Image (tube, rainbow, N blue to C red; front, side, top):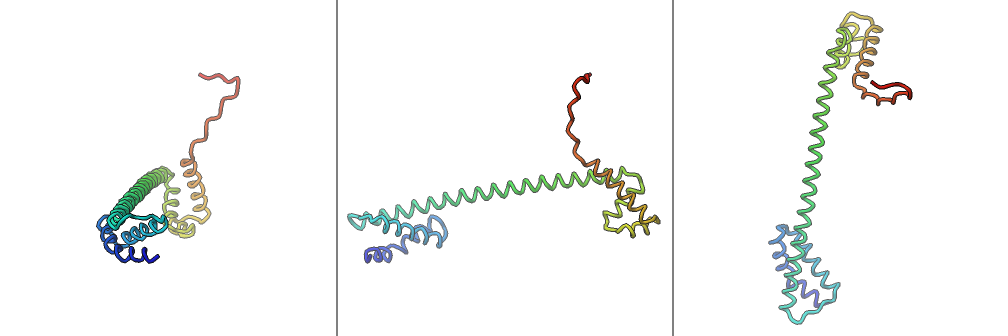
Length: 173
C-alpha cells in the first residue's frame, strides 16, 4: 500500500501534465492518471526498476489519453451528425408546412366570395357573431358558409382514396 502512495505522490503531477498536454483539459487528464494508477493497483504488476515503471506509466497515460481523444471525436462526430439530421428534418418540415399553407390559401382563394370572406375572417380569429356583424349576415348564414367551406377544404386536402379493383367481368379499355 505504501508503495502505491509513493507512486501517486512521486508521479501524479508529472503524469497529469503529460496527459493534459495530450487532451487539453485538466479534469480529463486527472481522471486518466487516476485510472492508470488504479489499473496498476488492480493488476498487481511488478517492475524491475524505476525506469521500467516510469516508462510504463507514461506509455499507459499516453495510450489512455489518445483513446479518450478518439472516443470524444467519435461522440462529437455522432452529435454533429445528429444535429445536422435534425436541422435537415426541420428544414424539410418547415418547407412542407409552408407549401401546405400556400396550398390552403390557394384553395381558399378558389372558394365562392362569401365563403372566402367568412373563412378569412375566421382565420383572423373572429367569432361567427363578429363575422356576421362585419359582413351584415346572420350568424346562421356565417355558420353555414363556414361549414360548407371547411367541407370543401377538407375534401381538397384529403389524400386520394386507393383505387378499388374492377368487379370481375368488367372489361378494361
